[in-house]
Image 1 (cartoon, rainbow, N blue to C red):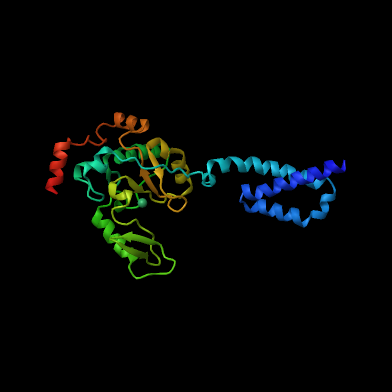
Image 2 (cartoon, protein in one colour):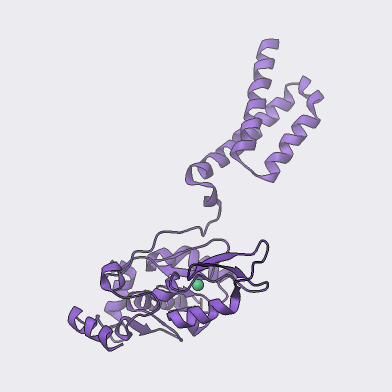
Length: 274
Ligand SMILES: [Zn+2]
């Protein structure tokens, strides 16, 4: 019986210890501290039983999160790489922030996006509206951003004179430091806003809006880029593989959907003219 009790305590202790590494959660650490403080109580079998039970519960809760990666605890942590539409991929010759007009579509209620992202935006916006959730960009400049507008915004927010512990960016071969009180911004030419694939949603973290976005962005081909830092910044990630939901919206709204892009010849002609 004594041997059984000792083995039981060792097992319980191991479970509790493993918890600290599995679940980096303050409540678990509290249990662990409690465990140590009340060592004398462990003479009875009740305490190990108690901890074994909690160990089991926490292990069950902790393991799936570990498997999915730590950030899986954030329910809106949906981040996938951006697939570029062929019209703006590397071989297209189009530069970031310098998209020809025929690739850009005006979106509702204001701003412009690459035509693929524009259709996905309109489809998502209509679905949100049907569910009583309003979606709009924070401003017209927070959809497609030209290189020059990204550059002027960047120069307003960043300086060359070093600031301790400031956010830094590389631009034009130099290190730039974020001025106090300004939100970070990507270096000109490196933001998905420069490709017309990103949009910043007004008041994204409002409870019903973020809940709706969590449940629906994927269906319309969007994902986040930085969570939890930037809940408002979503990018269209499906390239030319238009999601079914967006195809359905295009079929139902042929007059609102973007015109198909012009041919390669007229495209390069267009670039020559700019
Ligand atoms: Zn953004």
